[in-house]
Image (cartoon, rainbow, N blue to C red):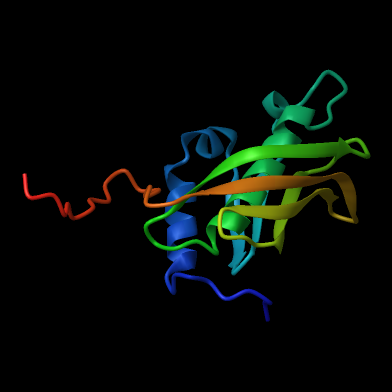
Length: 160
């Protein structure tokens, strides 16, 4: 059970639809898993082209997953007509990201009217181990009345 009440009963559909439209996540090959109010998980299988020279997942890939899980955890609590934008995040790479896949988990720790603060953790996973390789905090802004879906059409109240 989660501690947050979403402002949109269709939050899970919105999060998954938005993720599916995010071309960069598709390019990386990331998959969205758990979606609950204020909590999101994203995973990514190991591929050589996602690694740095030592064979570990690149720090930029790890940071990208952290940013996305924080953003989508925040997005899960927003109204249907709102969207999300990262304001800032800090990431600590605390162990080599060595494994068969990455698992990133984002969790809202302080929801707000305009800003949400999230904790993000990334694990490097193999058959026999799950090692925390990064931890971070991020701030994510609610873009009020700015739909995430570009196909979403607002009804104009102008008389023009």
